[in-house]
Image (cartoon, rainbow, N blue to C red):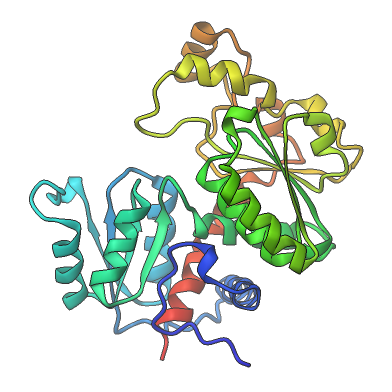
Amino acid sequence: MPVDLRGRSVLTLDELTAEEIHYLLRLVADLKKKKRTGTELKQLSTKNIALLCERDSIHARAAFEVAAHDQGANVTLIGPSTGHTRYRDSVKDTARFLGRLYDAIGYIGHSQSAVEEVARWARVPVYNGMTDESHPTQTLADLVTMQQSSEKPLDDMIVAFLGDGRSNVARSLAVASSKLGIDLRIISPPSFWPEAPFVERVTSVARDSGGQITVLEHVGTGILGADFICTAPWFTEGDVRWAERVRQLAPFAIRENAMEATDNPHTKLMHSLPAWHWREDEAGARIAKRFGVECMEVCDGVFESKSSIVFDQAENRMPAIKALLVATLVS
């Protein structure tokens, strides 16, 4: 049966089947190739898209804006910098108003319940550009990057995620991996493991797809054979108790010895950005002095190495979002 995503919102990857995810990945690759060769058609020239930003993210915002403009759509940024604030309008009222004017809404914020409420009341496609719970556009970009960086099919890949296993990146990667047959290892301190019901759910889905989702604490066991080692920011806006988070997560920073310990000479580094990797800048020096660590998340030597595909990954956020726009808005 042909895949048809027209008129659909994408708030998490839970809402998509494996076939729909594979369809989007093929569309991402196709749109990326057409832009590179100058053969891309503007299929959204009559569309208006609202980008509702309730948090700062240069990566999400830039990717949405370029994706829409490439396809000929008009984009309106709406957020605190443009005078929009939750204190003046409820989510429900904002969604009902924007849905009358715009053909689609991109949401970048903290609350998963907020983006779900936008989708409930807007009556136009809504895309989750990022919430604290889910990051579907990042994961689509990650999957495309893996495909472009390995000769293996996705269902033959071993992916290790180090760091905060409860993060939006880790959770979305687990959902996608469970559907696509990927062997994913989430390697975190136990206090940063995803909640048990979530792990049980993705593990059950993985059994049906031939994949495997493992949550563990031992880095050496988790990274052995990994084709990709992934991580994500340790901190988001509003996080507290930094010292305790650094203390627990420090052993899970990606250093040169971790890349070597995979016993796979082709292991690649992935990071969803922004990354704390350079202690010589002002913020890095302050953190190194305060917490006594030489690196957080990933060391500069690994981040800048030939094994790093971080910026290929970051670039792919744009065609990933473009694929969602085209798949859901083109008649």
